[in-house]
Image 1 (cartoon, helix red, strand yellow):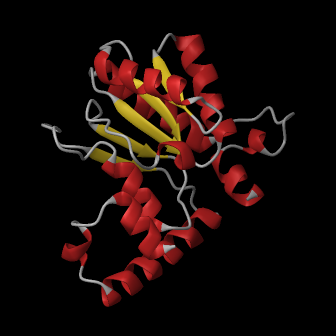
Image 2: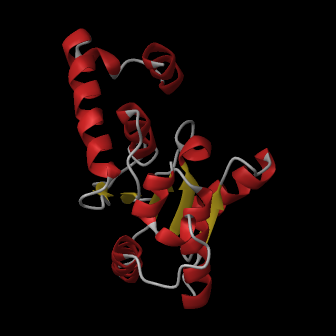
Length: 188
């Protein structure tokens, strides 16, 4: 887990770290480009502390965002979703994988940023599906941020093997008729 955190930003493992993070800088530039073009974006990470780094940065730059984590009450979650979906000025939704990966309809977004790969490739697909829902009228662009030469590359390789195994066992077209919960149960 610490290797995954370091690939995101070294400060996640070493609180006194004062250097830069290439991934952090690249994601910030991407968010700036997306929001300046009046698009909305979902930003997913496995680590709430990682999302908090972006929240601090957005607070300092005036970018309006909402957040969804597992520590939030159902009422807080609902309010975050409502604000993102309905308020034009709220352009970024920061979501933890576990809290925001299933059961949400976030069609206001037309960009999805995956900040770190997950061991289960279907968790990523479910996160992306938050924007690919009934009612989505625009193309949805997905960007994955992978740090070269890190454990993240090995996770991607594992994802590819798992996806291939799944494809060999189940026709992909048949999966589209399954709900997110049914798919989770099948693949866990």
